[in-house]
Structures are given as structure tokens and as C-alpha cells.
Amino acid sequence: MIKSIVLVSGGMDSLVTAAIAGQESDELYFLHLNYHQRTYKKEQECFHKLVEFYNPSDVLEIEVDYLKKIGGSSLTDESMEIKDHDHTGEVPSSYVPFRNAHLLAIATSWGEVIKADRIYIGAVEEDSSGYPDCWESFFKAMERSISLGTKAETVLEIRTPVIHMTKAGIVELGNRLKVPFQYSWSCYRNNDLACGTCDSCVLRIRAFELAGIVDPIPYEVNK
Image 1: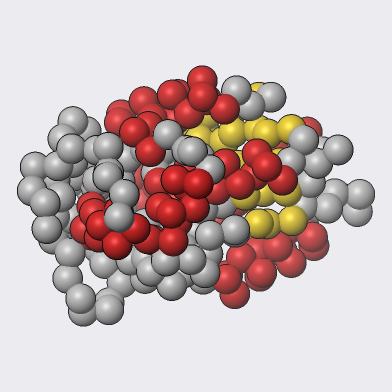
Image 2: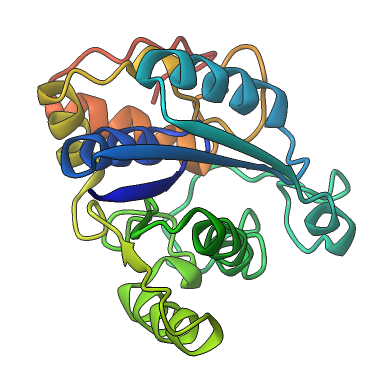
């Protein structure tokens, strides 16, 4: 009996990861964290639709507004501009400092209580925005920390099934798994119509184009 917690943001990568976890697990538990980013309303809406679609054993929604209070990211600080996609290779302003560590810590606390076996997170290393907390080495280090900081009988594996996939590969896999891409959201700017020019929108648009699959999400501008 494999019991898995899936970090479900409402985004495309976590959606495909949830579908993979569903195939590899006996029980699914969905965890959604609201850190009051600009598009949290749309992401929450997508999350609720995914809960209805996948019907996990239990759901936990957590408010982590302290990440907004800490700031340092254009996703949480409205005084910072969300820039259009560029190719500089630098960590973009949308990076939320050490966000995935906070997400995994909360998932670990819940996992220890419900005696989960795995935590799934839809991080992507090779074809993403270049966030430092999306590297495989980071997740391996976090897994070691979890082992050291929990009870002896707690064994929690961090699974990152799409981490070495391209975005187009994730779209292709999601299509094969028949995931509801219409219930996912990638835009960093808007809660109604995706902008089409922010870093996340551009990566998503390009992924669907390369995969030769129609993206069900409408955009203001298509690149």
C-alpha cells in the first residue's frame, strides 16, 4: 500500500506529476499552498477542479502568506515588475526565495502524521526558468534532511518524475495520460486571460507547439 502526497499548485507540471503519482500509488493526498502570489485565485480554482477530477483520499490547503510578507519575488511583491521572457540565463525575478523548501517541509509534516511513503513535486530542471530550488541535487539534499529530522520509523521519499523532461515532453506525456490541461494555469500576471509573454506563458506556449498539441488555455498574445 503506497500512500503519496502530491504538491499540486494548479500548474501544468504538477498536474502531470499528479497523474504519474496516481499510477504509482494506492492512495493520493493533494497538498496546495497559497502564498498569495498574483495569480493565486486562478491557481486555487484549478486546484479545486483537479481535486474533483482525481478524487484524492484527502486534501490539505495551507495559507503561507509569510512568503508574500518576506517578498523578494515579482510573484508576491506587486512593486516588482513581472518581466517578459528573456534568454539571459539568469534567475528571473519571479523566483520565490527557497519556496520549494517551505513546500516540502509542510508536506513532510503532513506525511509524518498520515504515514505517507512519498512526496511528489513537479519540479523541472532542464527546461524551466532556472530556479535554484528545482535542481535534482536540492531534492536529494532535502530527502536526507527529512530522514535526519523525522522519527526513525518515518521514511519519506521525494519523487520528481518530470525533473529531467523538457516542457514539450511533459505536454506529450500529459496528453498520453489524458490529463485535463484545461484545469491548469501557468501565467504569472493574470487570473482571467493568460498574458502569453511572461516567462511561464512563453515556456508553456512553446511546449505545446513543439509537442504539436493544442493548448486549451487562451492567451492575450501568442509568441
